[in-house]
Length: 340
Image (tube, rainbow, N blue to C red; front, side, top):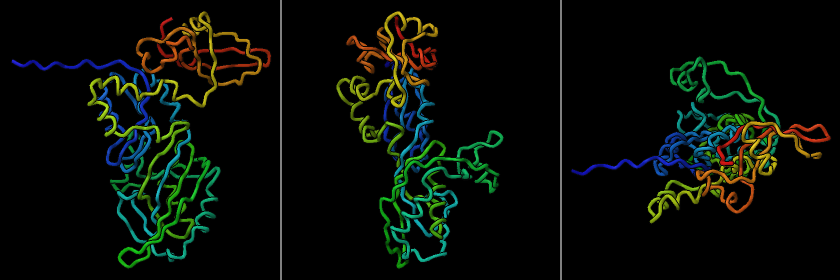
């Protein structure tokens, strides 16, 4: 009789920059990678629709404690908006209706740039009905599929940058066709589908997204991300877990925008016990900071934070730094498990 041996899930911590392909939801992608790593605890942040591709950070173990930090970070997208048509969903998955309010061949790159410049800075945006926002515990897209329109309050958002990559004119079936390719860096909560529709409206026509790819979240770039195919190749190597773990970033990779504080052994021990620490930091900037201690991290972080095993400080978590011009007080915020 053959007895199947169930492999035990692994306790590991780190961040995987995953390059999600189209056709998969964010949760489907997470579950596939979780099985590949035999990971015990996982999570993702910055949900991408199945139609969208690009950067989807996946967290393992202790890194899940800092998922909210990426939700707050700005995002960068590459998108293509096809003009002259409206979509019930704002993208290629919806039902299309042709809109002939103006001649598409008259839309120039200079005009598109002038219009897009109006959307840089603070803007007001109404979330689309086809979104995961909830009303009475029910996602708006479920109401939309039932033909029910729900009032949505407008939001104040920030468009940091909006670049026109190109304006392309083509003839499809003998009819004029125009698409604009954009790169946008925006604050959290921005719906790029709605932004594309609003830009098209400002151009005197309608539009919907045919492509959407996230290229960055904060300091994290898609160029350093791994596709599922690349991960499967690593998983087929002679030492699959060594190969897979080697592409993970340390937990603090999610916190690159924060300042840092380094503690000696005694202060690191006290900080890990939840104590507030008076520090001699006259010129320190107040606010949330990364905190490092001289004590090595647990084995769970051994492969993912190798600095801790070379006599250098290891990441302990985040703290809140309060200053008064004469000194500073550091209080614990969110800690990871360490051996002290």
